[in-house]
Amino acid sequence: AQSVTQLGSHVSVSEGALVLLRCNYSSSVPPYLFWYVQYPNQGLQLLLKYTSAATLVKGINGFEAEFKKSETSFHLTKPSAHMSDAAEYFCAVSEVKSTFGDGTTLTVKP
Amino acid sequence: NAGVTQTPKFQVLKTGQSMTLQCAQDMNHEYMSWYRQDPGMGLRLIHYSVGAGITDQGEVPNGYNVSRSTTEDFPLRLLSAAPSQTSVYFCASSYRRGTYEQYFGPGTRLTVT
Image: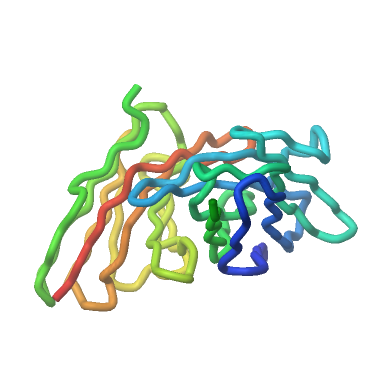
């Protein structure tokens, strides 16, 4: 069975600081891994995805994530936070069905 | 393309009432899913479908029914609403082949009093 654990339900950073959102997964097969972002009162939209083509994946809005099989991790980073990055972020693993983490709310302080 | 559409956006029900949440997609996706989102609990899968005429239960199926008569539509029925079903409901779709990247609708916010 697949599962996802997001470490930290709330992360707060200052504008311009590094963003690091943590995700660990378990899956019985090589996984497809995703990060989705949800802005207030909206649905989820894809930020980036890992499909085994490359371990470092670049997404929209300057985010990237690195797949580390040995650590079963897929952490999301952005070098410099912007106020517009404030949102909820979900890590997910998919085979046919998708399993989502509980989400991490990112707050960006001016 | 409209993508994934959901209606209504908001709904208030009394306990015991029934209703159907509508979901449609125009991307010819084979897979469709319903999730509920509750604070601190992420998205939990209610039901999903891998094609017209084929549905299966997810993590939290009790109190909900689905059917898939066409590729485009995947309605979610609440049989007898309960306050525990107060939530935000999202419909999503994806291709059968590929990476299972999901496309989400805007959600329906349901309150059961």
